[in-house]
Length: 151
Image (spheres, rainbow, N blue to C red):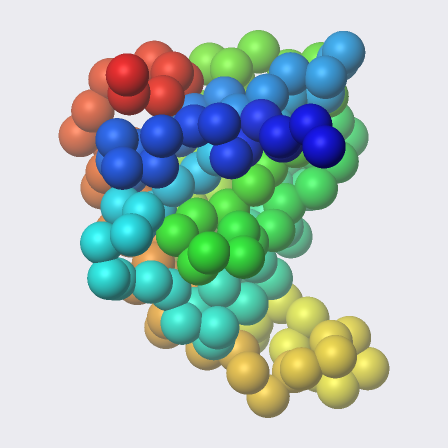
């Protein structure tokens, strides 16, 4: 059986940041790594779920929104995947930072936090989303983004 690309990346070398995981035609998958893999610190389900609701809503309403295919958490709980069509990486990085800032500054209710809107609406916490967004925004603002995994 052929090994999938994400299992071929040395996870012991990955640090917090944003990477291009793969390119499939006009679709680019971004690895938004909020945690160092295998370091013992993982996002809680409530944090992942809350960031997903907030980030997905803001990014789909951004200037690249029409090109967003998917945003969601990694099963290993160390980050998120963002799939985007026909968008330059620099534009993606700019929008990701903008969206994270919007989450940090969000004043109002959690997006999609009603029973009719979500299959687990009780497991959402805006403060957890804001905390995670702030920590990740600090990482992205403090480093040069090359989109390349560490070798």
